[in-house]
Length: 490
Image 1 (tube, rainbow, N blue to C red):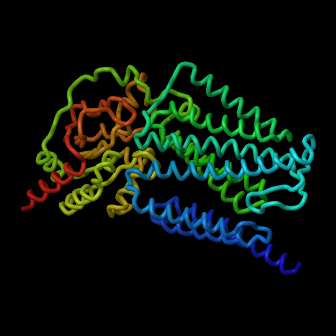
Image 2 (image 1 turned 90 degrees about the vertical axis):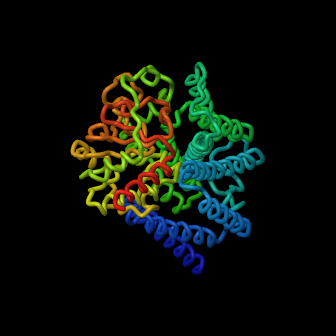
Image 3 (image 1 turned 60 degrees about the vertical axis):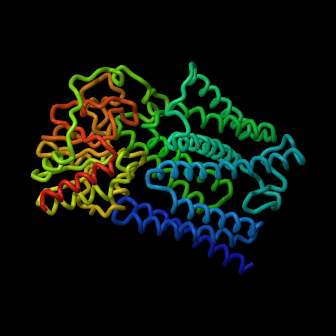
């Protein structure tokens, strides 16, 4: 008995240390300088929590659990090293979906296990469940299943299922396997009915009416709602959606942790849920849109603003002229976007910036909160190329400097620099905070063609009098700028 108490104390201490590592790791992730260390800290916390869980006295099937962990670690290591930075957003969506699916699977195991025992022993009795069953501990002695635990188990299963199926759709959209939006007449009514069915069955289950058929129907409707809710959302909203589903996954894990009485799951889930919720709110604010508008609005649909003709014309410029403009400028601001990531041009862009700095030009990089397809995407790309953190400025800090900027170089960015967000009330992005690139004295835009951005909206910046278009692949164009700038010093 004394050994059992000592072991349980040791496990509880490991969970406490793991929770501290989760929180401290998340705190360190708030700064690019310490983010890598934060990930390592949180990783050690998760390793400690897993090892402590395996030490539980009544743990069953340790061999299978360890095998599953090793397979998962190997798959994540392999995919993490092979996936390009341009595909990182969809990878995050996929992994987030796996977390939600895991929480849903725990809920399914609990509900189905109790439903089987319930049907055999006492079909109309609640909350006592003979032979209470747990995916972590296997069959145990008679344990009462409290109404709170059952309700949270059902709620966690619902949220996890929505996060799982919704994240898979987000992955498919970002990967280009699905159209950006899929809508049909009466879609929101259908979605509401599917959600009502899932919630209604869930409430019935939570009141103790556990049957295999009802549990299966509950998961069918929950998974279907995740699919239907995500299909009509435009690709430009995917960063917000991924963040929201991340919060969902955290909450689902926390609820299932309560059902399993696992402190590490509860703390980790709540930390992830809180962080994901805060990030979702910040991103929605950066787009000047409510979360409800993201989920149920029509952003990304063809609109009058997207289809209207903009006065003026796009004026091309040669790489040699663009290089000269920036070589003799006093201040240059470089605005990267997803196009730079696709072209893998970050290294050439930094090489060009270094040449400008060597000539005495003051260079900064401007990052919009939702640049790319996930938060921090551009920051990671620039860090990968070796750009110092003190040269990277957020939108709030850099916007006042555009009026005194001689040249703004936009490479791959589109919707986040579109002045229609301030000038055209009919535009779907009207009111969204943008980088005030149009206020610079001269603007050079590197773009492959004359098409619209990811949101499908025409950009008035490209037609402005102070804008010149440098057409071509981002890496090739950056390479040309480097060559031209070097030739000036030859």
